[in-house]
Amino acid sequence: MSWIVFVLIGQFLNALVVVGDKHIVTAKIVSRPIIYTFYVGLLSMVALFALPFGVTLPSSAIILPSLLAGLFFVLSIYLLYESLKNSDPSDTLPVIGGVSALITFFGSYVILGEGLPSHFFTGFFILIVGMVFISHFKFNRTVIYELVGSGVFFGMSTILLKVVFLNDTFINGFFWSRMANVFVVLLLLLLPGVYGLLVNEERAHTAVTNKNKKRPSTSSKILFVLGNKALAGVAFFCILIAIKFGNVSMINALAATQYIFLFIFAIIWKKALPGYFSDSTYKHELIHKVFATSLIVIGFIVLFI
Image (cartoon, rainbow, N blue to C red; front, side, top):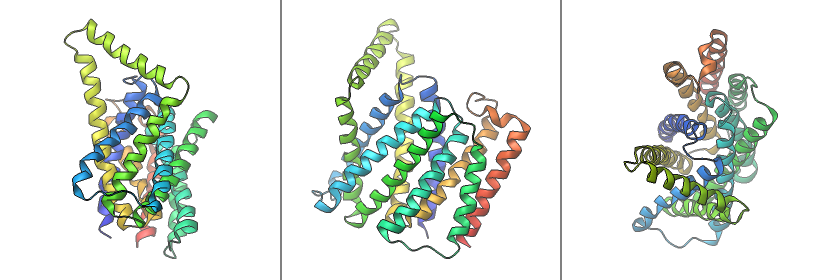
């Protein structure tokens, strides 16, 4: 069960990344979520560093699952970034996680044939109820669609990653699944308007650079985005290790620890970042989230006793 440690480290880092993502899309460090999605997918090219460590040509068994996993992953982060524009990350992520866990559970049962402990259903139910309570349905219809869609696509991506790792080595699975992300975001350039948005983004950065030759604003924005995604890369690598050696449904259930971390961040940073965690400054909202987080913790205890 040592893979659980990797899940917990990964989810702690993911909680930090989500706060960073919220800042990026609301402060318009990157102008549009679709542009941010493009850059995030392109950063998967960092997997090229794995080439000297035993990467081989992909087998026919992993080509299609890798491409589909990449497609679903890109769709999931795009919808996540769209939802973060108008919602609190401590509300948004629990809904996405709950939907993702539910999709992964059924997918693992049907596609992977994974067995679960007899008490899993009880713990899973409590966990989902906690996720629903912590989100307390503060969203309009558009945001709900974005959250559900993101959760569905992320769950499907996780299942397909497990299929990839079952049919190849970890290094090969990691490398080709990351290259699939790059391939998918490059296809975004074929969509009407996306290429134009990218060109306008570069022109805007150039204009800022020419106006201010010291370039503190543009440079700091780039460094912030790269730093946030580097942190996300470390988190994702931890999750990939867990996926390779652990149970996919339980890994997704453990994603609830991310919401506990976000709750803690809301308490610590509610004054420093009021625009991100404003609901946590009110006593009744705080009690609500304490209750919901407690349900999540109980769900963990039931799952792993």
